[in-house]
View (cartoon, rainbow, N blue to C red):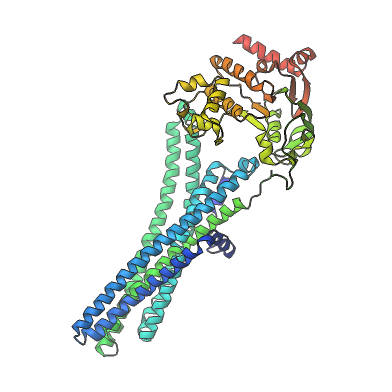
Length: 594
């Protein structure tokens, strides 16, 4: 991952963006009643916290001073009841808001995943897997924290602060002024904290992204690392990255270690001023003891929400940045879409036609130029050529993973882009050189979610493509566990499973992209026999490096530098003594050398 790729991780964004917040709240809208209850519960908790010191004031000034034991008992019971109410409402608020956050963020994750599935392959060419996983997990989790302990907590903190200030002014404005002498110093501490922690969080995010990228790359390339004895060198590199991340996190710890004592010192200083001035008032009988106790308790409660708001500022800032990155993906439109009024589902009753097709993955750097050929129904057409000739690009266009720039591709005379994407791809069975197996079991990897395929259907197609014997050799047979990317299967076994998968879906058009390469000699006979059964009576396009595997093709198309260089049968092309002949002789002499 390049330095440019980390740029998004550096952006922290605004502390508050009304447009982004409205979009975030859209996911809360279905649960607005829960949100309203949570806010109400938060306000009740704040009100109860305001009431507790006032109960003590009344108890001290009225009942203790008047030696009213019954009144003291009543006030004690009221105080205990308020404490119990605070616990109940605080618990309810916490549970509701976390429940709401989880529900809302689950909806967001589902929408994000569904949208990512709809995006064109060009999007995935430019966005690393690690970044997309971060959007679906970490960034969404930040938004969950915003609702679970952010927005509503801020509302409760502001209400508590306003209530404390109001009651303090109502009870004794002079003592309130004494307390407020320390407020400018407190805001200065909080302001400095926000400035430093903002830069530190940016550094943490950047270094974490670099560490994750390094981990992903190394875990994926572990075989190469081990065979070239790179363990020690890579350990040193990881140690540097890990050390840099640790340092950045320790910088954050240092800032918080300063913030909390600083706030405590300011709060203690305010309390000291209050005791000095208020104590003098008690001696002069201008302030009651209950009032002084009330103010001391309010001062201790006053600085907590201010400290909490400083932390919530950073949470809000991170949430704005995360939401911006999430909505950037959601606002990305698929480049390949179904038409508003699609044509009838393709049936491939006649032919597939490429007519003067031009295509470039980027700009005008064309990888296909003036490509014209026809694939008649029921025939097998092979495509050969050197690496980079444009063979796989033809398949990408036919499957509409990308759209061509100029020309036309048609099925039975109907332009390819006129079909619904789902209907078009339901026509096609694709077997790639690098077979992708999903975590699960063998049967699930052949069925791929099509529940209409019974176990007998699965076994039948496995027998047809010669996969049944090796599947049966496993202890659990078709229920044998498949690990990530089929790590415990050989290349040949994975290819046979891919053939079984393709046959199970019974496609009208079968596409094999280098599906017979990298196969051991013992498995090749099974593969060739499976291929004959797969291709029989079926329209097929076969891309192959091994020319020996496509001798019986009805037509062979030779690609060279993005153009159709020559076409014909195996015999015709050998007699032409052109590029195909040179490729064939090169492979033939290579095999003789082996």
